[in-house]
Image (tube, rainbow, N blue to C red; front, top):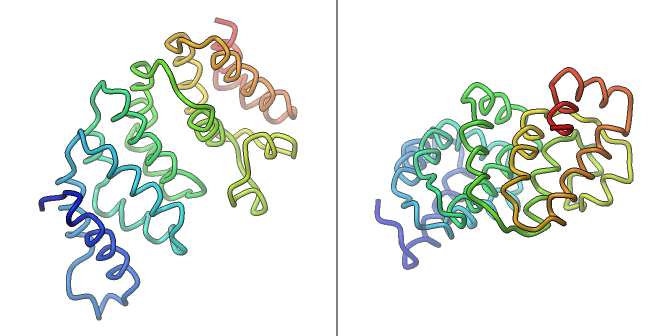
Length: 218
């Protein structure tokens, strides 16, 4: 499958249309189509990952679409597209973050794939970012309530009761800190992690049992 700016809209429309059909009315196999699509993406086509991120974010039945992505082995295929180019890494991690967000099925598969180490170790190649990118990674640390799941900022979420559930991304963030050029971003990550950990005894216990406190001290 050749993917370029001339046919990209049609491909995304096809994914939407086929997914919204019942299986017995589909003229093509969605898993096969998605598998070929992911395999056809070139590492330099960072815009495709951003379009996929927007698709998941805006799609009404994103939970079901995420399952279809998993069936098409998107994690394994996209991992092969990673390189040491910052734009490539950021666009892929933005997609992975959206894929993981509020999806226990994806999170379980991601853990089995050793995804945190495989994908997020690439953060070391990123030396300059935006606050929004950091916030999206920090949000993966916590369990959000139903009321918090619709576009709330990290600041507004941090003002409410939060449960620390993801030590894996936390370790990745801590290891990334020395590679960031801007000291304000370094401090922002440290202070945000600290606020989350200190929010409750449960959060502190989770941090201690997973080596987060030791990692912060180092």
